[in-house]
Image (tube, rainbow, N blue to C red):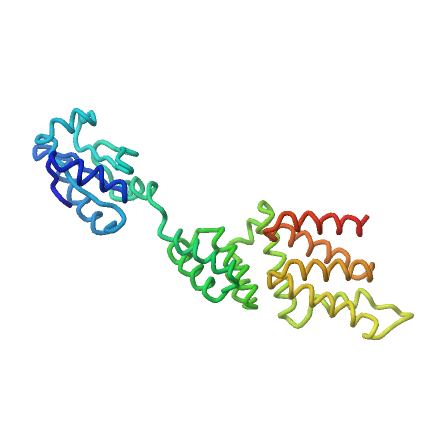
Length: 288
């Protein structure tokens, strides 16, 4: 940490704070808590290098600054951004408290990777997006939205087992969050397909008709259902919804509830509200 003179404050603090956060430790040699806090800030200045510029000012040698910033007690720690004090504390603090004090004013480390990951998804560069989401979650494993988006990317890459494993920490929240519930539906559909067509097998048994036995009766609608499900898992929303609605229109008794649930899941996840509104009306017309 630079021991800053009063004459350099404008240049080294106020100007620099226009580009990055600057932490200023106002201290004095006679202040006992200052002697304890100082080494902690020295350590943190290395940990935050490149993100926060840290300096210290001997308040005894800076009467104008002491008056300007109304420094009455020491140590006084101030955080500057855009030439203004945005936060401060007086007295000794634990290292964890100081980290929290700093962190709440900084962009999170994972934010840049998350922004790039979302951009890669928009560009359909799913493999690169997947790696970026991994990095985000290494930095912040509790980032629920990033995890939810990562699971959807894994589904789009047909990495269904990985998607299911990654989703498990979110599953308990599906009852209180419609978007998590929608992704849970997709994950379960993927697992059913991966397990060898359990969904189709169940539907085939539901469709069994003693007057018209045989797999040929159910083959066409089952294939349509599978294609619509695969489109849904891949995020091809329009294709999936067209497939489900076509099936519902022409095979009225075939998996109507499963199709309805699939459409509702898509409505939660599709990013185009106008498209969702259009297909919501079409679904309502078919069901009623």
